[in-house]
Image (cartoon, rainbow, N blue to C red; front, side, top):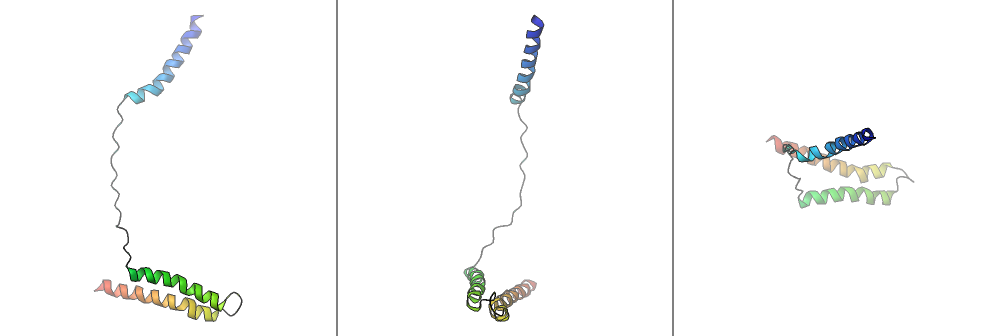
Length: 100
């Protein structure tokens, strides 16, 4: 009769030990990880304007030329072409500036 109660008490003691002993011990402090981050990009007003213009110009040319209905060559040359040439020039000039 007492052996059944003892087994239950042992199981309760083991389960309570599993939950209570880790809480009673002091946890080890986790080492602080140093994360090296670059500072956020600071965009000038001219660069922000260029980004917006490079999005709106092809959009406006697409609405005007309708390359999905007509010949896509005028849209490619007058819509996408200036944007690609402009950003390419900026890239080349920035490379020349950094080389100095």
